[in-house]
Length: 305
Image 1 (cartoon, rainbow, N blue to C red):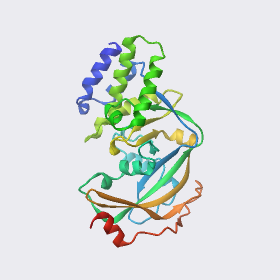
Image 2 (cartoon, rainbow, N blue to C red):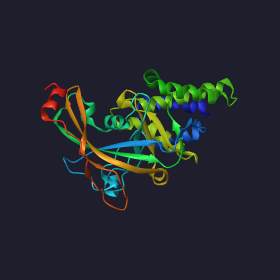
Image 3 (cartoon, rainbow, N blue to C red):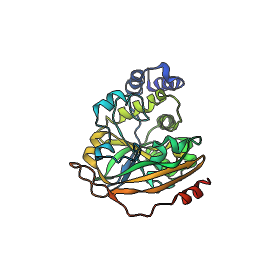
């Protein structure tokens, strides 16, 4: 079976991924298609990555480990049991949001990706749900795979379109025959659609998870950047393995925020607490921000209550 036949088989698999194992898909990519196209982009030094976690009521998180990638083996074994867009069950990855052309505050992308309340128009929270934002910073530049070939993202995000055009130019400069260029483009469009599709079953992530794990074998690849589905591709996400976090990404600041919601009306306000100096060897030192909080009446006005 050559790579063209393997690709057609992968397309068939994608129509009903619940009938095909992850191992089948991984092997088809690695041994069938073999030379997997990898479009690379630089993540610059001092780039910010935002992550968001919902608090348990009003309780503040105790340690920065609670806000980074999962380290609790009990959680990994018992809770991390589903495929994610770039991970297998029980596989720990560090997901976050980057600043984008259309969403300059990456915490908004992170909230959209994290909060069911934010995404679901049927859910309300008039009293507000507490979240914690952690901002992380890259200590050096590194390379990541750039997922920019989805027709949905290209239609919605001009920055993605520019990255796409740059990747096309780089591909053409390799001096490949037209048949090879066409294959690369078809494959990357297919993979991008797998990363950008909206799913109802976690098994629908098998192809994007397998692609992630294969490209991460490349010694130069430290992560994957892809458009945020939950923001209609306006935001940009990044996913990296724990090893990359430990070597190249450091926590800078954490703060709380509150999400209020009434139907399609949402309001995000700065919370009362911030931790500006993070020492991984110590608990988070939360301090009050001193920012004025919105009154109950002001919140009701914003939500049209």
